[in-house]
Length: 148
Image (cartoon, rainbow, N blue to C red; front, top):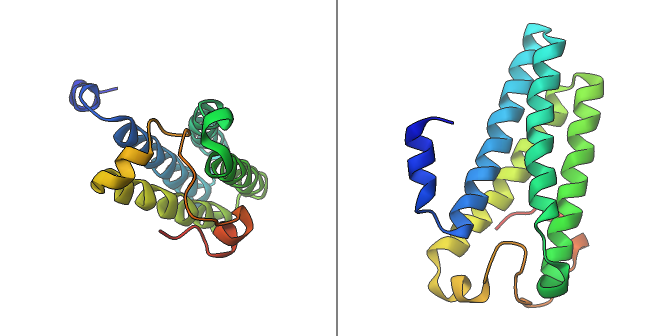
């Protein structure tokens, strides 16, 4: 990690760190697309592995006991994105990677909105421990494309 990036993250809020992790997923999936286009199997695998590492980290940090349904929905989102990326890697499919990027961007943008909204920030004590919001099922979130 560059010194600039390391210094920038030192003062970041928990939400800012989650957004940075989503940016990392997007960056690695973009690298996977470039590797597919170059027919670079090893490059694709390395990029996918790094994206997986971030997703696993995010999923492991979810607090289901505190976050309730929103945390469960995030867990389901991470599982679905993991599966999409795995399928994309197995098929060397730029389309699958691009779809995963769009989904991750949608959730990342929702976190950005939360970061800018003082009331929303009060509802979030830490990423993954979201206090219940108005009723929205995970099916509705997935079918809506996870748009904020």
